[in-house]
Figure 1 (cartoon, helix red, strand yellow):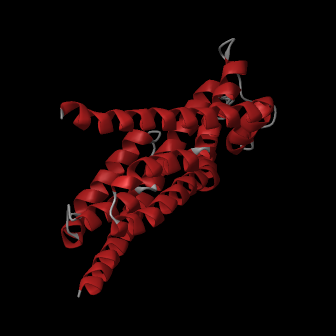
Figure 2 (figure 1 turned 135 degrees about the horizontal axis):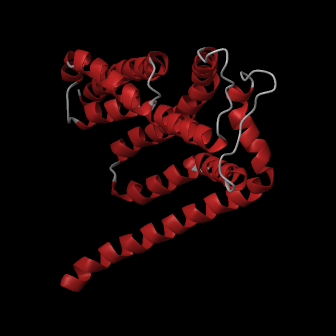
Length: 245
């Protein structure tokens, strides 16, 4: 009896291993295809800052290995970002057999929405936040100081912001799941709005550079996305009650 109970668990572990291997293979394949263009990819990522540096200034490498490793790291992270839909599909395929039909009906739109929102968060960071942020930093430098950022430090900053905004844009999904699962009521979440706003600014303070502009550019969207999650959570709950009526 014990062997029969352990067998499904072993099967799940084997399936999980296979899906992890598939994910690693896809990321590696995308990375291999993009590696010859590593320099161009880094130039594109660095463009929001490069375009705001004064004439004659540029980015520098303070470590011997940075000129190779920084574009290499940029390309690998971008390969992972591109493979996010495949990664989430593997997660979905692994958990889907254990879901009920009504749960699958909600889970599929949530999966697609989470992918779109993650990319939307990254796009918001690149096209909205970076120009404002780097304009502020470059313009605030003293006239006698030539701004010449280190390429590795710049990459660490933008990757941190990419992840911060990508996951911050998942807030509606997390809020909706809490309401849909019954873990918390929409009215209860709404009553905690002042604490959520303070929490958003605390997260912004921890995940962004120490200036009010970048903190607000993360905190305000997080709060608005929280409100979007409450709205759709109420709508799904209402629709569920109508279907069971």
